Image (cartoon, rainbow, N blue to C red; front, side):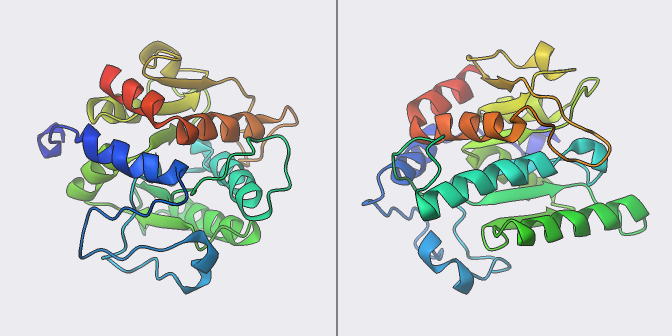
Length: 240
C-alpha cells in the first residue's frame, strides 16, 4: 500500500548509518527509545516496542523456503562473528556497529510451510549465535512495513530466480538501497551499483543452504560495503 509511505528522511538515516561506522558515536534520535550495544546482546528484549532499531538490515518476504532467507542469516552471522572476534581476515578491519537484522513478512498461522519455515529460521539464528540481534516480525502491519523499508540501511532480497519481485521496487520507492540476487526479476529492476547491489551466487532454493561457491561471503561483503560507506547507501536510496 503505497499510501502508507511518506517521503524518506535521508538526513536522519545518514546520521544513524554514520553512527554505525564511528563506534565512538552513540546517537539516539528517539529520546524515548532504548538503545543497546552488541557487547550486551544477551540482555536485549527484542519484543520491547521501544527498542531503537536505528537503521536495520531488513528482509521482507513471505515465510516460504523458496525465499532463501537462510543465506542472509549465514551472511549476517559472518559479519557478526567478525565484529565480535575480529578474526576473519576476509572482511574489512574497520570496526563498526552492526545494526539489527529484521526478518519480516507475510505469515499465515494456518499454513504448514509458514509455521515450519519460521521455526527453522529461528533455530538457525540460534545455531549461528545471532538470535539476540535478529528480530522476526511475521505479519507486519502496513505501517511497520513502511517504517522498515524507509529506515533500512539496506533491504536484502534473497529469492533466487524470482519472476519479478515487488519488494525491491517498494524499497527503492521508500528510499532504501537494495541488495538482491543477480537472477530473475531484480536483474531488470535493480541497477547494479546505482540503486543497489546484485550478488552473483548460486543458491539451493530447496533447503536454503548456501552452495559451495562462497555465496554467503559475497552477500556479507555486499552488506558490509554499504555499512562502511553510508554515503553510497544514501546515494543508492536517492537514485531508486
